[in-house]
Each structure stands twice: as C-alpha cells, then as structure tokens.
Image (cartoon, rainbow, N blue to C red; front, side):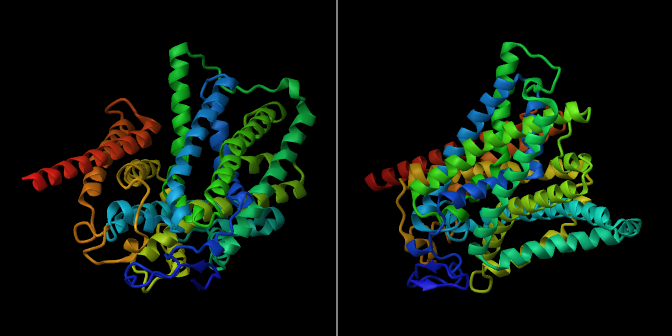
Amino acid sequence: MSIDANQVPVVVITGAHAQLYNQDLAPTAPEGRTWGTFSLFSMWMSDVHSVGGYTFAASLFFLGLTGWQVLLSMVVGITIVYFLMNLIGRPSQKYGIPFPVVARMSFGVRGANLAAVVRGIVGIVWYGVQTYFASKAVQVLVIAMLPSAAEFTHNSLLGLSTLGWISFAFMWFFQLVIFLAGMETIRKFIDFCGPVVYVVMFALAGWMISKTGLDSFSMQFSDKHFTGLESIGLMASAAMLIVAYFAALLLNFGDFSRFAKSEAVMKKGNFWGLPVNFIVFAIITVIVTGGSMKVFGEAIMDPVLIVEKINNPLVSIIGALTFIVATMGINIVANFVSPAYDIANLAPQKINFKLGGLITSILSVLVCPWLFVSSPQAITIFVSIFGAVLGPMFGIMVADYYRVKRQVIKLEDLYTLSPEGSLYFESGWNSKALFALIVSGSLSIGLALLGAFGLIFNVGDWGWLIGAGSGAIVYVLANRRAAAVSALGETV
C-alpha cells in the first residue's frame, strides 16, 4: 500500500507498466474507500440539483401527460438508471479502479484510450458550457450589487464582454481551486452543494404555497391531450429521456464508486440519491413552477429568475449564489473528474489526476463555450455524434464484465503490456470490442442524425438504449463466434 498526493491509500501493483499506471489510476485500497451513503447521496444531489436539472424536471410536465403519468414515467426511468448505475459501478467498487482502467477490461490496455478520449471530449465541452452558464449568473449578481459595472458589458472581445470575461475567469479559477485540492475536498464540497440547494428549494416551495395554497396546484402545464396509445408511447419516451439525461455518468460512475466503502453502501447511496431524490426534487420543481404561473402569470423554469422576481435583493442574492454553487457541484461531478482521469490515462507516467484536471480546464476555455452554445446546430451535431457513442460503450463494457468475463478478472493484467496478459488482446486492442463499437455506434449515430434532420422518424432519446443494446448484443455474438472458431480449430 502507498499514499498518493491526495492522501488516498492505493494498492501497489508490482511490475505495473509506467504507461498504464500511476497512483491516481492505481486501485484504491480498502482504507481509502471513505465514501459512505451520505457522500454518494450528496453526489447525486449535486448532479440533479442544478438549474439544468430543475429545467429538465419541469419540462417533463409540459409534455401533455397527466401528473400521475409523468410521475410514473419518472419512477420507471430513474429506477432503470438506478439499476444501470449499480451495474457499471460494481467493478470499480470491487477493484477500486476508475473508468479508464475499467475500460481496459473490454477494449484492451491500449484500446481503453479510445473510450477515455471520447468520454473526455464530452466532459470537457460540457464543463466549459456549464462554467459559462454559471459565469452569466455571476455577472448578473455583480451588476445587482454594483450597478455601475453594467458599463463593462457593452464591449466584446472574442465574443465576451469585459465583465463576461471577468465572471468566466472567476468561475474557472474557483472550480479549479476546489478540484486541485483533491478528491477528499471534492467529496466535502459536494456534501455541501446538494443539501444546500434543497434548503433554498424547500423555502421557495413554501413561499409559493403561502401565496397560492396547495389546492390550486396542477401537475400538468400543457393543454395537449393524447389517446391511450399515444400516452403510453409518450410515457416511454419520457422514461428514456431520463435515462439519456444520465448517459455520461452511466459510463464513468466508477470514478466515484471506487471510493465507496462497500457495494451495499454504493447501492444505498444510489437509491437515496437517484429514485428518492429525483422524485422529491421533481415534485418541488412542480410546486415552484406551478406557483410561478399563478404568482407571476407565467411558468418560469429558471429558479434564479424566480428569486429575482420576488423583488427582495437579499433573497435574490442568496438564491443566485445557491444555484451558482449547485452548478459548480454538477460541473465537477459530471464534467471535471472524468476528463481528469481520462487525460491522465493517456500518459500516466507524465500526467497525474491534478495535471489532467488542469489540462481539462485549459481545453474547456479553448472550446469557447459561449460561441458553441450560440449555435443550436453545433450542439445538435455534437450531442448526436458523441452522445450516441456513450450508449454503445456502456453496453459493451457491461456485456463484457457480466456475460463474457463473468465478473472475474486478474487485477495485475489491467496494468501490464505483456503479450501474456489476458487484456493485451491484439497489441493492446480488443478487435471484437472495436467491431461492436463501430457497428452499434454507426447505428445509433446514423439514426440520431437522420432523425435530427427530419429524414426519418426521430428516435430521439431512444438512441442511447438502441446504442447500448446493439453494442452489448454485437459484442457478445462476436465473442461467441471467436470462441466457436477457437474450439473448432482445437478439434481439428
């Protein structure tokens, strides 16, 4: 055992190759698995309790379904997510390894870099976007507290005003400071983020109820009406929409489950953080959004705007600061930790977790997220291409661990480039996994793009399920065929 710079005990792998191993990628020792039920619960609160999470939950009630139909869709969708998270989190919890190392089981010790790069790109882009959105809230707060600062918003330098750049730089630097303090500090930070948003949301819901009364609330915000079959189809799509919302963390949840004290703790934290937390937060969202229709005459889906409309400077400042913190929480959880590990995996002998995070931060600026979000077509293409690949990767990894390897691997083989290693495959690449990824990825990307441009029926949020299912099936069949060919060769 050893202690790394973040004071996390790790298991030393004797003979590990420098191109595959450093103390951030090494298995977390039992003593280093300090995340209990509350920490995992808080992690999920940080992921859900954001402006984006609020808007997403509220949008489901505008689909035209009745309130009970939306809630049933939510229960089904988030329950699916719960079980899938347990599946992808188990190998990381069992062996104490992050996502890029788990990917070596399926794609090979070198092929895992491909999976890490794809996931890393998605994380970097969305990290920049979320940082930009949070910086806009900072800019609003600055102007609210110092009105004269508005004069610094009238110029433009590479798409941002002077105050815009200052606000973005503040958010960029503040998040980086938290990240560089290490995973234990990140754990403490997200332990704070999720719960504090609940305090504000409960207070906001209480204020709305005091203004309107509970008997006046409706859980349906749309005038649309659907037939029985149409409703069932829409409910299924809503459930898949929830699964798609968690697509990124469905791939790299192992970056966090590796620190869980036990599998039972992981499942318990996931239960409270996913089904229970998501439904409670959604109901609070309905109360606040529904109340805004009666109090302000319109359905406001931005909680920061709601606290501003209350017209109390102190409430506005506290509310805005709360959601800025919440956005930082989801940004670090969903979009920062994973790219840091993914980049470190490319050259472990030179790049550690902290340096990977610094590189992530720099690249997130080079993406120029303020320009990226101004182009709806760019966002559509990005989500269609990269998002559609996350599903196939999930399907391949789960099928490999549970169906092909039967949950048994040799830990040392994850860190060796020896041709005798069981995960060396063909020069470090597993051709069967690559074949499955190409086939299923082409299918899911093709359907997503054709649907987005109106050339076929839009598969929408079923793309993730199509990709994951086809990836798993193709991979299992490819392994069976290889086993049959091998057996035939031995008999001959």
